[in-house]
Length: 471
Ligand SMILES: Cc1cc2nc3c(=O)[nH]c(=O)nc-3n(C[C@H](O)[C@H](O)[C@H](O)COP(=O)(O)OP(=O)(O)OC[C@H]3O[C@@H](n4cnc5c(N)ncnc54)[C@H](O)[C@@H]3O)c2cc1C
Figure: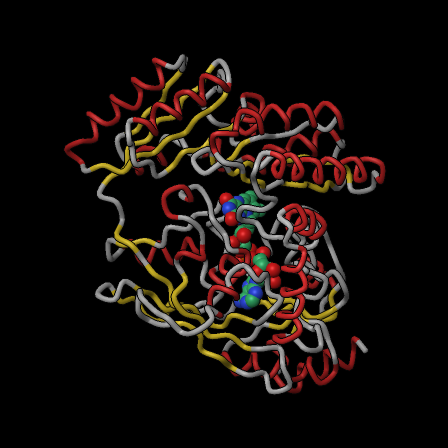
């Protein structure tokens, strides 16, 4: 079947858009976690019509399709769980239109979030969704995971920024549908645009998006501080909130994790405690005053070392954000060292709890670290209660994999016990399917799963699009 599919796809698309070289296919078959599947071919559509042709072909022959951006997914959402064809959107990466007057941008799905922001900065604007993977993550991938990031407490997640979509449905005709509007206000019956956001490539292939944009803040001041205990750090957070400071960034990492990340990034900053990173948008005239107020709060709550920057450019230059951005790299380094160079798998959690319950969540995660004997790197978006504890283990160690899976489930149960959720921004993929069921059951909403499975059947009657994911 593999050879027939490759020659069939080459016939309809042209040979230069289809790759079946084994080494290249392997690159597209895996995710950063280390999860890996097997691939029949990778196709590189260059237009909406190409995507529609691929879908018609796959529908006819019941071939599985896996839409993919940069494959930075962390929950098993992007890799081919069953053999099939990767539909890479990397050649559809045009910024079609920027309209400042309408506060929108029209883009193809393969545009990287970083490149979009480089373009928007020329107009004094930005697209605020900022995952740690921002340099490579694509618009299509971010829409489909419902991504968030470091500015989530202020700007929310993708669902708050997608106004309209063009999608190709996985049906007999490869139907092309335009959903949503090019206006900020829009009522179009049931909100199918929002249904696609966060659907993890299981309902339709996104081929174009209309996104809302916002002006760049005039200036942002940044402070990075280290605290003797997590309780001190949380009381600083409470004080910052009670003063009504409108933060853009509010991130944390525990002491050991910050030390590892500092080592991984060869940073000059030596962490001396639990780390809090805060950014506050201000006008230039107020920068000095607000920075003074912020560092005052940090010091009065016990911060030992405080590093400051009067602008984001200065913060980037002094690498104040690098330690936090490298949480995943820190765990990779640790697991790699501990496994003495064997291939490793990383599980990064993505729970959210109400911020008031964060100290309990962190203590619970520390208990689980001990219970399962898995060294845990811990950090996250403290402003919105989203935590990313991460563990790693050698891929060939079955016993460690079992332990890590149990740890993963228990972290999610902890979040549910504290009134939180099992996934804040990474999605469900394959790794969180059981936990999603548990979350809905605890809410007495088991029927919601039936509704979701029904929606999947309506969009994808033959089940060819990213099978085995979400529901
Ligand atoms: C180091 C690191 C840090 C990260 N930090 C964050 C973070 O702070 N916040 C956060 O939210 N996430 C984070 N992530 C997760 C991930 O990077 C984001 O979700 C990102 O938006 C995914 O983009 P991508 O282009 O890599 O998508 P992919 O991984 O390629 O795909 C993601 C999902 O979208 C589907 N998909 C992709 N393109 C399309 C399309 N055109 N049509 C239909 N379906 C499509 C895929 O099938 C898959 O289910 C991080 C990942 C890493 C490795």
